[in-house]
Image (cartoon, rainbow, N blue to C red; front, side, top):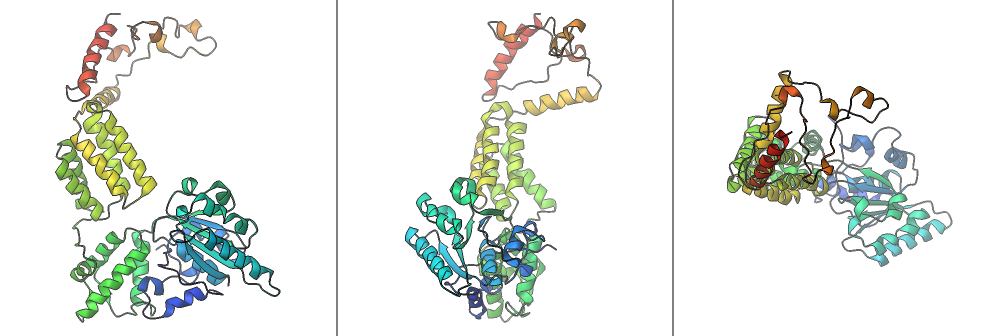
Length: 454
């Protein structure tokens, strides 16, 4: 079982010596706040950041000053890392949100940290945590540079956006970029077990039914804060019913989201994925949208969905609409670039485009027929005039001597033998007359007529 991190929902006001973490101790604090890690040893997930000698270990355990830029999805540990840095290194912790703070706020914190460092006998440094730093303008990010450059503050900046597009280069070059990954179901499950039993959490008051756990993991989507928020809501529902088990109906009622009967590792995973692709192939856009919604709601990996759409674009549409492949690849890129839940829109656009596109399976039929011939042994030698003639002595053995350059012909097509003798008459590509492929069919007929007159 791996160990990992999660975000602190709403960091407290600035405090000295890690006091910001102490505010999580009161019983009315949200479960996600009470259960947040207090040390590196309590972190769950992100093992690539926690190895011995890693920059994060050196920063926290070796108390080595450096500024961090944390990039990752929500609920993966960006704020938690900042708080652990503050707590374990006995630094002052100050949080600013890029949504509400301006240049004046940034300079005020940096000037205060600079004055503190200049005060005789003072040894307490300042950790400045900026959430959603990508929302800062260039001028606001520029205001951070003196504090980072002179180490008046230890900057820990968090972003869910690609920092190479959203953070200015001078700030990037002065910070260590750490990339956080979505927590796995195993990671989230560890946190749930800890929250159920730990005295800071639910202190053993409730059991979590297995089907409720599975549903909660699907809804969490790798976000630990969301998982603990849902668990707390469900515990409140169980408490109201005077029950000691959090079952699936209680969880569904608490979070107002019904469980989708869908096993990502079982038959339904493949059945629903198959139904999505077959609905696209059948041009039923409404059915396709239904199956896409089921997969998204059940927490299916959006990358899996995107991969299936890219395949469908060539397998079922192909030359019927050659732009379909570009649409599907763009959706896959959007999934990687944006992430969920926003990427659901990109996936939906691709599904609509693919479902409504004219269909042709001529591409897959062509390549499969050609592969079948190759496997059957039809792999005759390459005609001599097509062989590589760029090395010394090639022409002496007849390579490339009679080759005719297609661009020298006004038609752009030269009638000469291209395929080996054994498959010289094969016609693998058989275009349909649907959609844009009709134009290719007409052109292909003319090309084949020219090529056979050699």
